Length: 306
Image (tube, rainbow, N blue to C red; front, side, top):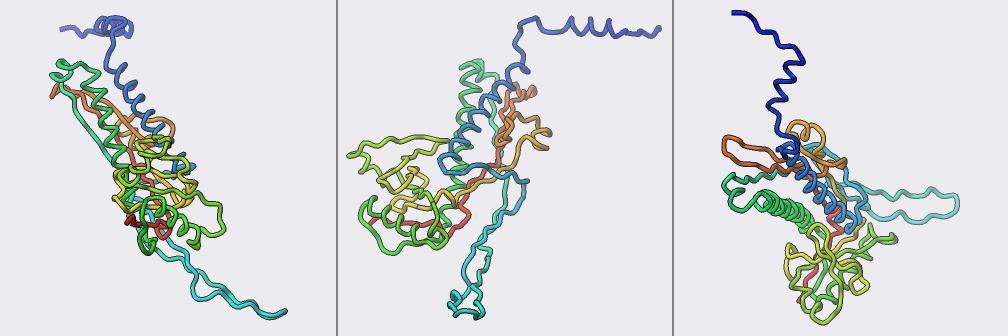
């Protein structure tokens, strides 16, 4: 039997014969575009939240990085003043490790079957459920943030009646907290919706939204108030924006290359859609490592509304 030698031109002709008809929409046209759209929306939301919290940029870190929190405090008493020509005493400060946590990657996946796509259409089966997956990511980022705030060690003695009086007392605590004294700081408060409901029923204020966070720019002249059900009722939290920071695991590096994730230049969120032919389904895979936290937990105060 003779060997058949295919020339490059003949191979190209044969392959073209099996190409889809011009104008046909194929998987490679749809999935990256869908992933890019969702990724851009998530990144825009994260960047909006950064603006609200006063965070200028997130620090990229590798998976498994240990993030350590330190507190600076004065050791002993301030050195006494001395006379002319006498030795000036030292005022000593110490740096103490107060908390450590490991930066982890959050992963999400969901599946849309062929039967579901046939029943309700591709847009609802894939895109609308992608929207729900986005909300899960937002919810988890928020939950981690509030977990950090809940570990704050700043205390306010006594109780106060009403939200306004409580926030005013917390404002005073922020002004007298030593690391914040004499600095140009911007207070921010976190309040349960139930605690602010009575005030909203009688006052005209505008609530804005960023990445699922609802907030008021300048509440009663005390600073920004963020309203969220994740905050424990009757126990608002307070700190300053300058005490808030964030880190992330870039999804555009080795992780993105290995799993074929779509992300923008920031790499804050990676996402992809892929066919699972054996199950006649299409999967959505989403990853992020964005974490917001308070650097000085001593500067996070918890109030109590009587």
